Length: 307
Image 1: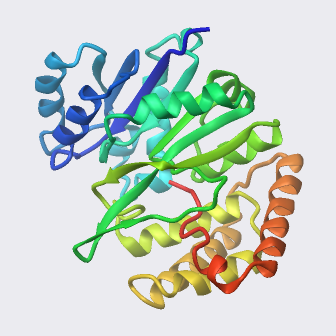
Image 2: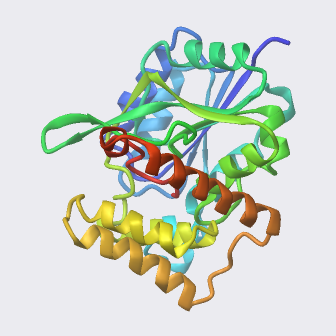
Image 3: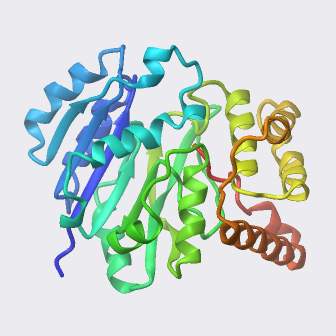
C-alpha cells in the first residue's frame, strides 16, 4: 500500500518560529499528503502569518479553533491538555482512515529536508514499528545541544504513528501525560516505539518552558503520577533533574508536581493492565541501568515525556 501521511499541527503564539517551520515543510524531499495547522487562539500574529504562507504550500490547510481554556481564562494551557485537544480538533477535519501514517508536529519544530523520506523508510523496513520520530536539538546558553532520551521514547513534539497503531491505542488521549500514555499503550499492543538518531530537527523553544520552566517541571511530575510511575522512580528522577537549570529547584518542582497530584487525587490512567505494564517497564529500565556502566547511565534519557 502506498504510504500517505497526515500531519496535524496545533499552534499558538508561534510568530517568532512559524515561518521557518512552514518553509522547512515546503522544502521536504518527500512532503506529506496533507498538513492541517490548527491555530488555537493565537494573539501574536501567528494566524496572519499562516494564512499568508499557506498560499505557497499546496498540501497545507489552516483552520482556527477557539479554545475553551481561553474562555475560562486558564493560565497553564499544557496542564489542561490544550495540545492534544487541539490536535484532535484538527484530526476531526480529515478522514484519518485515508492515511497510512498520522503525525503530530509542534509549531516550533524545524524539520530537516529529508525528514519524511527517512521516517517513512524506517516504517517500511519494520512492520512492527508503530510509533517513531526524530531527535531534537535546542539552543541552550548559546550552544546547540541534542536532547537525549531513552531509545523507546519519541518526543511529543514530533510523533508519527502508523494508522494501525494509532487505532490500537485509541488515538491521542486528551489528558496531561498523553505522550507517555500513547507509547506505553503502543508497546502493550505489541508495537515497537523508537526515535531515529539520524534525524535531528531543530526545536526553537526549550521543551516544557512555554508556561515557565518550574511549572513545566511540576507538570512533568504530575504526568508521572497520572502514568502510574512509582515514588521510588520519581525520587531518583528528581535527583537527576536537580542538576538541570535552575539547579536544585528543577528536581524539587518535579517531585512537588507528583506529590501534589497524589494529594489532589488526580485521575490516573484507569486501566489496571496499563498500570502493571508501566511499572514493570520501569523496573526493567532500573535493572538495566543498574547493570550499565557509569558512562552509559550518564547519557540515558534526559526527559520523560509529557506535554
